[in-house]
Image (cartoon, rainbow, N blue to C red; front, side, top):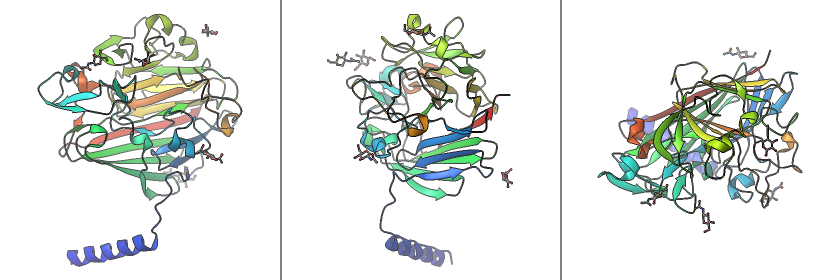
Length: 386
Ligand SMILES: *[C@@H]1O[C@H](CO)[C@@H](O)[C@H](O)[C@H]1NC(C)=O
Ligand SMILES: *[C@@H]1O[C@H](CO)[C@@H](O)[C@H](O)[C@H]1NC(C)=O
Ligand SMILES: *[C@@H]1O[C@H](CO)[C@@H](O)[C@H](O)[C@H]1NC(C)=O
Ligand SMILES: *[C@@H]1O[C@H](CO)[C@@H](O)[C@H](O)[C@H]1NC(C)=O
Ligand SMILES: CC(=O)N[C@H]1CO[C@H](CO)[C@@H](O)[C@@H]1O
C-alpha cells in the first residue's frame, strides 16, 4: 500500500512537473500581509530576501522601514554595489579569519584538525565575508510553501561550494502575524560536519527617511554588557570586552546617531571607521523576552526583538555611500533622486558569536552535521510609542 501510494505520488508530481516546465522567477514579488492587516511585506526567492516591510506609524500611516532597491534586477546583478539588502546571509555569516578553519575547531585554524579554505571575498582576498563570493544572498532559493501571510524558501547548498564541507539544506519561513509581528525561522540540516551561522541582514530606517536623514532620533536598547573585540579589519581577536564606559553601552536606552562620533576614539568599527559595526553578546540568551529594542521618536515606530540567538550585530551604515556608485533610495523612501547616506540606516542581525570557529575561547559549538541540525528563530514585534 505504501509502495503504491508513493508510485502514485511520484506520477502526480511528474505530471505537475511536465505541465509547468518553467522555473519560477526568483525575482518575482511574494506579497504577504498579516490576517489583521497590521503589517505587510514583500519577499522574493532570490537570496530569500525581504524587499519591503510596511508597519504603521504614530498616525496610523504605513511606512516601508526596510532599505532596498525598487528594481529587483539590481539584487541579482549587484551593479549598484553589494550592500546585502535584507537577504539571508550564510552558510557562515560575517567574517572568517583568513577564510580558514579546522574541524574540530582550533585557534586561528592552527590545530591538527582537517583544514578548510573558503573563498576569500573581502579585504583583497584575506578573509571571507557572508559565506564567500557567492553567498546565500546571491542564490536562487525555491519557494516551497506559501499562504496569504507566510512563505517558505528553500536552498540546497552543494558540498564543496565556496569550500564548505557537506551539503546543507536550509528552509527559511517568514510569517506575518496579527498585532504587527514578523516571525522568522531558519532550519538547516547538513550531510557532513560543517560550520553554519545564518542571519537576516536587514537595513532599517524606522522613519522611512521622512522626518530626518540621520539616526539621531533612533533610540537603541540592548541587554548586552560584552562586545566582541576585533582587529582593524573587523576580525575577532578572541576577547570579549565590557561595554562599560564606552559608546557601545546601550544597556540604558540612548540615541544611536548621537553615539556615533564618540566611536572615533575607540576604533571599534575598524581602521579609519567611525560608527558601529560590532557584535554584542546578550546577557540573557534565549530568555523568551525582548532583549533588543529600537524606536524612532519621530515616527513613533518601535521594534522589539525576541530571539534564540546569543549575539547581535549592529552596523550603522558607515560606508553605504560610495560617490562613484551611490544607491538610489526606494520610491517609498523619497527616491530615486536621492541616495542612501552614511549613518542614515542601521543593520541589525540576530546571530551567534562571530568567527567562533577560529576562537575556541568563546565556547560556542557552531559545527553542525548529520546528528545536529541548525535552528534560528526570532520575532520582530512592532508597536507605536505611547
Ligand atoms: C487575526 O486577526 C484576524 C482578523 O482580525 C482574526 O480573524 C483572527 O482570528 C486573528 N488571529 C489570531 C491568531 O488571533
Ligand atoms: C532594472 O535594472 C536593470 C539592470 O540595470 C535594467 O536593465 C532595467 O532596465 C531596470 N529596470 C527598470 C524598470 O528600470
Ligand atoms: C587592498 O589593496 C589596495 C591596493 O593595493 C590597497 O590600497 C588597500 O589598502 C588594500 N586593502 C586592504 C584592506 O588591505
Ligand atoms: C559628528 O561629526 C560630524 C563630522 O565631524 C559632524 O558633521 C556632525 O555634526 C557630528 N554629529 C554630532 C551629533 O555631533
Ligand atoms: C596564514 C595567514 O594567512 N595568516 C594571516 C591571517 O590573517 C591575518 C589578518 O587577519 C594576517 O595577519 C595573517 O598573516
